[in-house]
Length: 447
Image (cartoon, rainbow, N blue to C red; front, side, top):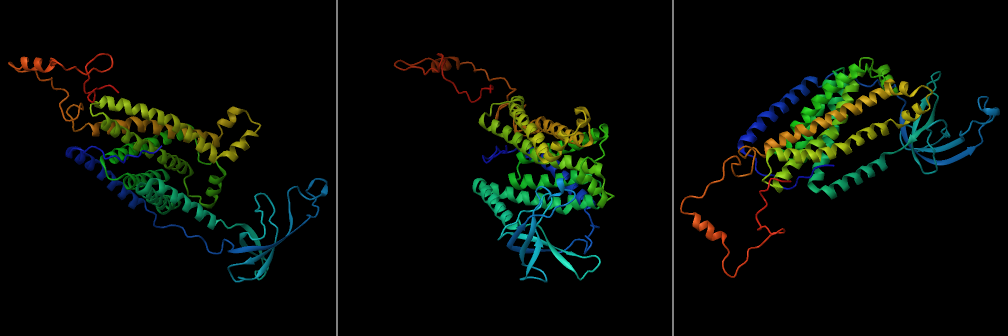
């Protein structure tokens, strides 16, 4: 749930603005300096010629036929699910552009099913014994056009619903991907400490996205400080949790494959970096919501004290956290669903499966991210309550000194007050439900 705080917030006192600027600006400059120091300058270039060339093509003809029997198949017959035959493809790129070539029907696990008119990707394979002999195979379908339409629909829906705010959110999303692709991923690939790169990259994303999406306001600055504090706490908790559980980072096939291609990548640090970056998306949602909740409560009832604002907004944060915890766990489970299904067929005891490297690291991810979220609620709410009530003396009612005693009537005015409180002849005193005279309830402290 995102916070939409389009209503203008009450003006922030100049002293509070100066404190926020003196706090946020040095943190932002420190983040920029750290990003410049960690910026990758010796990125690895992919070796040319290691990947076979890939070209676009269009299927013009498909001919299927029974597969010949194979010794490996049961009974010596064709393997179950295999398809044989030829596919005629018109090559759209490369040296054979415009020509018709024949390729075998794709077979094997995950092989694409093709039909006439499908746009596909061709891979040119060369015979190692004779480089002059080459053949084409179908690798996969072209997905560029449907993906472009889906992204266009996604952007149009966000702009149509959020208008300028939606456009700012799209700009923030583009900035997030730019920082990930130009700093975080290349920095980790270049051998920089993954956890440090992740914290600096997440902080940089946070500064850009929050101020770009929600504006340069005191409320946004409070969300920034709450998010940054929670990010650092998440990194510390992740370091302690992975050390206590002896996680190595080799809990997935992808990590093991990465270690084969880039042996100098710190997989343990990469696991911590994933925890920090994965929690950022939910953290800024929680912190922005808490800061906006305090502002709205103070706007709706200026009589709420600092403590009452904190308690009321914290109740909203508890409801938010209760739903977000389930979101985090299900997101991790959904991303790892194939492996979880594979583990259900494991013959080991349940305790051994739960304490295995893969499941242990997923449990640590969920627990550490949740602890960071829980800490973000009281931290951000307390900061927002302090900033919102900073213009009041003692954090009480707006525009007045809540701690000062009510003025006593001066001598000689008692008769005038009694005359004002006595109904005149022919008039009635309006009564509120319950028989009590109606009064202005805007300053009631109750919520």
